[in-house]
Image (cartoon, rainbow, N blue to C red; front, top):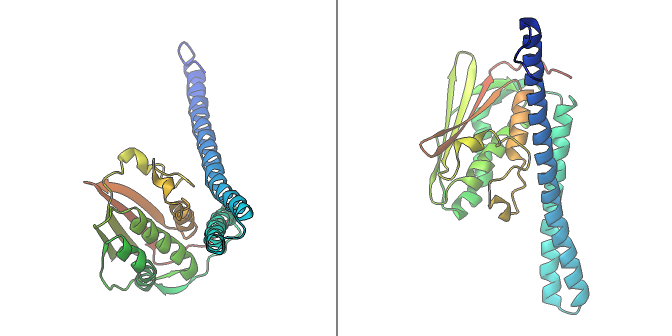
Length: 256
C-alpha cells in the first residue's frame, strides 16, 4: 500500500499493514521452500526404490545383485521412515500434543550418552571430540532433551570439516544451564544461519549424502521451545556455535 501523501493516522495503518503483508509473504515463501524440499527428499528415495525394483526384475537370476539391491531397498526405506517420523514428531509438537515431563535430570549425562552414539561416525570422519565430564542438574523432560542434544551433536559430527575438532561445554548461572557446541564449518556463511532450522534446508551439494534427512535442527529448535529454552546459532571466525540455554526449573507446558 502506498504510504506517501496520506494523513498521519492512515499512514501508520498503511505501514502496519505493509509490515504484516511482508511477514506473510516471507512465511508463504518459506512454506513453498519446505514443500519443494520435502518433494525432493521423498522423490529421491522413491526413485531409488523404483530403480532397484526394475533392476531386480530384469536380472532376477543374479544372486549377488539381488542381495545388493535388497540392502539398497532396506536403507532407502529406513531413510523414508526417518523423514516421516521426524515430520510426525514436529507436527505433534506444533499441535500441542506433546506433554513435558518434569523430573530432575543431569544434562551432562545426556550429552555424554549422545556423544557415545556418535563416536563411530566421528572416528570415520577423523573428528576429535573435546567434551569435559560435567554435571548440570535441571528439572526437565529427559526424552525431549535427548532429542535436542542428539540432533545437535549429530549435526556437528555430520557437517564439521573432516579432520577437525568439536568442543562441548556446559555452564551454569542465574538459574539457567547453557550448553555450547562448537565445530569448524568454513563453508557456512552468516546468510545460512537463518535457514538452519528450516526443515529439509541444505546447502548446495549437501543432499548427496543421503543418510542425513535435513530435519535435525528443525526438531531441535521446536523441542527446545517446547521445553521453555532457547537455541542460538552464530559464527565465530569460521567456527559454528550452537548454544542451548534452558532454565533449571521447567515451565508449565503451553498449549495452542
